Length: 67
Image (cartoon, rainbow, N blue to C red; front, side):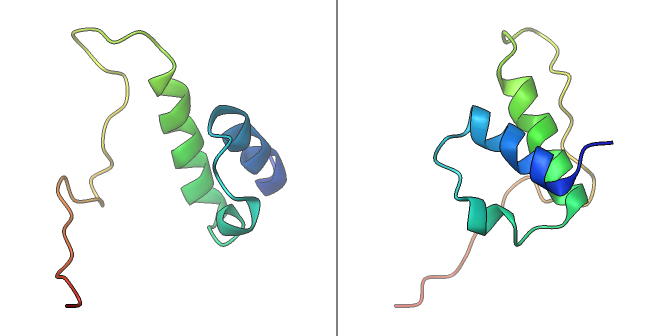
C-alpha cells in the first residue's frame, strides 16, 4: 500500500501543476482515487473507458456566482 506521500509524488509526476501543500489537505482515499483517475487518462481513449465516476460524486457540479 502506498503512503500518502507516495500518492502525492505519483500525482505530481503526472500533474506537475498540482501543489504539494494543496494535495496534503486531502485524505489518503481521495488522493488514491485522483491518482487512479490520472493514470487512466494516460491510456489511449477507446470505446470503453476503464474509469468509472464514483457514485458519491455528481456528474455535473455548479456554483452560484458571488456577484
